[in-house]
Length: 132
Image 1 (cartoon, rainbow, N blue to C red):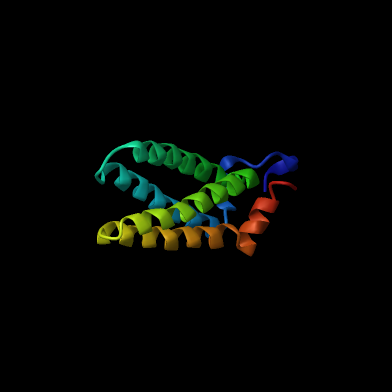
Image 2: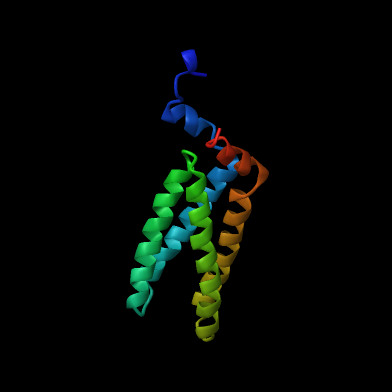
């Protein structure tokens, strides 16, 4: 603990990040890989703009989770919820593309894991500490 009540350093605070948040960050990394794959997967078009914008937003918000920033968790959860819902459309429209449908299912599972990890009791305590 820092002497004389001084503010915690970045290293001190990073050491206090619970495993649930670190695992959520790893899962978000998997989702980011999915966005990169989507840029490479034909056809290219307007959806690439979506993947670029949302990929950057995920990365930025994920970095803020290590500080902790409760509002970043809320925004990230909202973005993931929108994409989780949008995957239903991608799944339905691409009924002949087994690879893409498999990736959509994997995306659903990874997103569910992020939701569970970010809103677990350990994560809740961590994000509540930012308000203290």
